[in-house]
Image (cartoon, rainbow, N blue to C red; front, side):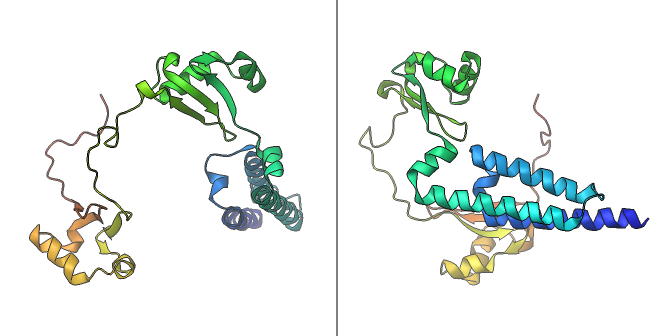
Length: 237
């Protein structure tokens, strides 16, 4: 029983220090990772997993290894931020795979990249014909960036000389899970009275609202708990 309690305590400690490490290293570690981020994530995950259940090794050895990896990862990230050459060394360079509709086989071989995988990533970018591509670049984090030739790009309002509404703000969340987000109202010089008035006009109470947001164009989107949909779809046919 004592060993079970030790495993529970070690697991809670492993979770806590992994959360601390992730907060120290920033959001990039849990988003699209480059090589250094991948090494750090795998190493920290392995250390904390062993901390949780490997009771044959002292806790302070795990903690020492963990914080060494966090420190090294933090230092490499800092150096990369300050020095472009170091950034290229640690993360690598973007590599062009397609240029003016032509696949660059030499660069493909360097990346050990197959045509099948290139086609898959192209389809994910809504590209089914490589001739439409001006440049396709593999980024250091493994993502494929595609720039289509001008004649295949989406038409914008600017292309058609049409007026476009100006948007200078992000959407503002007003209500979430039936609770008014007071800090958002204060930060954006909005009043409770204004929000309640908007809800009254639509015959809602705050507790009936699952989510409400003020869009950049000034419209208020409101989603209530009762959707009034008689036959909700719960799966894709």
